[in-house]
Length: 330
Ligand SMILES: Nc1ncnc2c1ncn2[C@@H]1O[C@H](COP(=O)(O)OP(=O)(O)O)[C@@H](O)[C@H]1O
Ligand SMILES: [Mg+2]
Image (tube, rainbow, N blue to C red; front, side, top):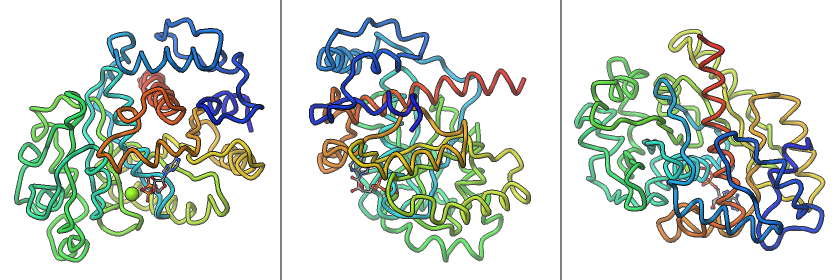
């Protein structure tokens, strides 16, 4: 594992002895706008960071020059797509940016985690894709943040894969529904689209609507299984439907510092994807998995936890990278 990844996986109470070294925490304060001085103990540092979460005025991320639209995709289920979508969204929102999450998974887990009602019949991504409601009509504000919005998914979306097949511009429906004019009322800096675990028309719609793909990869056996197929699909969409699409970000999730396997997977993923892999790594953490049960992100559920802090780090990195990319592209 690289030094960056190691330093990003250090916190929380049950931290193994090899990763509690405070100097590593210091290493990780890479963002120039983070002017806090960390306390001398990991617990002190965590308390300071938690306080920063609860008092967001302390750190504000720079707004991207253009709205950034991400598709969070990996056709494997259970790799952390939804968890990463909602927690990154919360991490960006708590640090001053406005974020819209579009839930494109009929399970509606992202909607649940953001505390958004999504019973059948609620204006949702389903009606949005079918053209029955506008984005404005489907958007709800998360009860946990005034800068966090969601277009929920209801179980009705389960039928959309089939219903979309016969529709005009079936691959472009989400993109059209999320146009600048449609979102004029929500000045979203980031849009994160949470995909179902498949490569069907819902995921294709997400890939057409976004410029960037974020692939969460679980640090477990067969981590890269199926990723080749995802990449081929991304290339196809790029060639035929959305030339700007690219894999900008890979996020390692459910990292367990006690296992060699996690390190091996992290190395393999870094070799494969290079700089696209965020230095921040999300640890396997009970708090992260408990939070959705309370209709919360881990940032609301336990802001000082290792999971919350790692998502904050990942959010910061995501925002900072966007600034670099934008500069390079110009
Ligand atoms: N960092 C983590 N630590 C512990 N459990 C996690 C973590 N990330 C995700 N999980 C749990 O793993 C399961 C799958 O995650 P999820 O985000 O729903 O995956 P996907 O959306 O890719 O299917 C969920 O039960 C979730 O709570
Ligand atoms: Mg999911």
